[in-house]
Amino acid sequence: MSDKTENTLSSDATEVRAQKLKLLREQIGDVYPAHFHRTLTNAELGAKYEGLEPDVETQDIVTVAGRVYSSRNSGMFMDIHDSSGKIQIFSHKDVTGEEARALLPMIDIGDIIGVTGIVRRTKRGELTINAQKIEMLTKSLLPMPEKWHGLSDIELRYRKRHLDIMTNEDSKLRFQQRSKIVSGIRRFMENDGFMEVETPMLQSIYGGATAEPFKTHHNTLKLDMYLRIAPELFLKRTLVSGLTDKVFEINRNFRNEGVSTRHNPEFTMMECYWAYADYEDMMDLVERLFETLALSIHGTTEFDFVDKRLSFKGPFKRVPMPDAVKEATGIDFLAMKTDEEARDAAKAAGFEVEKDWTWGECLAFIFEEKVEATLIQPSHVTHFPKDISPFAKEVPGEPRLVERFETYCNAWELGNAFSELNDPEEQRRRMVEQLEQAHARGEKEKQLDDEFLDAIDQGMPPAGGLGIGVDRLIMLLTNAPSIRDVILFPARRSKAD
Image (cartoon, rainbow, N blue to C red):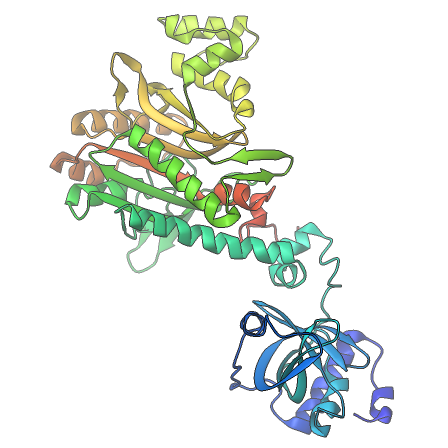
């Protein structure tokens, strides 16, 4: 590009790029070519020439590609990045052809280029390509954010995640680690003998959890449908079928509820069911899984989350909910016989409870108020009230409690598991009762899942069931304070809001 042309370019950065694109189309034709083949990624290049001494030039010719992140001395030195890392490009009349050097003034930060040249290491130890040929692969029409500070507006980071990852190495690493964690969960479950299946995300009857669903409509079937809130009922039907004794699904669930640092309307869970196992087997599985994932990401079971040092080394602390509440407040719920006694004890201790709350609802409320926040290291809270756990088996000798646990860490619930109810008559009774309660709350669309009950009538083996919140687990393992930091494209308000 001549000095005359350069002087006629607009001073607006975006307009300059548009003008350069027009000039490039006139000079080289296709600025977005379909065919380009590199010989090595930047990481592969670094590994191959790791032992190359400073101030040594090879005779090896390689082809690399990447986005331009920095340019110095009028393009003589450029850093280009691909997903694996960066490499320095050196262009000079002694090594670079005239056609390639003529392209340099047209290259902006953010453009994607291909480079063919000789590998060398500079006197300062920087692995470098002496460019013989440079090709424009993609002209970027928008300036990049300033690399060293990235996007300062946190909402803009979530809205324009591509720019966040482009300019923030921590964000890029976190999503690479997310991929590793999800694949690690899948590998762990498969190695443990579990079979992965896929269940419907569009359901005519929503169930398996208590939550507000997202509703849609199927035009051909003329049927209102719901995005699933949980895969539980379909996975249990798989267990009935005898397809496998150990089944799991890494699934996307949708709940039309609040948004917070720990809640997103669309989220990922791993849910599994294990025939001839119980909730204690599931505790062991959680501990082995968490330990395996920590080792894969950190190389150790101990790691930092914000200002805390966490340990995923099993066994985790196990404590029954009534015992935890008694230790925290002195209230002995197991000594009480009636709902009224429980409400009176809660009120006497300064808690505001509803006049119709049951024994179990009072116990669970005080647990949430006084115990949850203290559960920093991984812990299994066991023996939940049956009042709030309608699909778990009773604890032998204590019919008010069930064989259920939730796993907590950093005061967050990470997992929920039962010794699953498989008595078909009791299952039907509890589901009908739950349905009546939902209708009383105004949830008129809630329906009884007769197909699930029909399957349970066929006979489901005794089993342990487990659901793990994958996003929250990833938050802990990657030191992310908000769930939106670990979801690539989280739910957000529209620009107009």
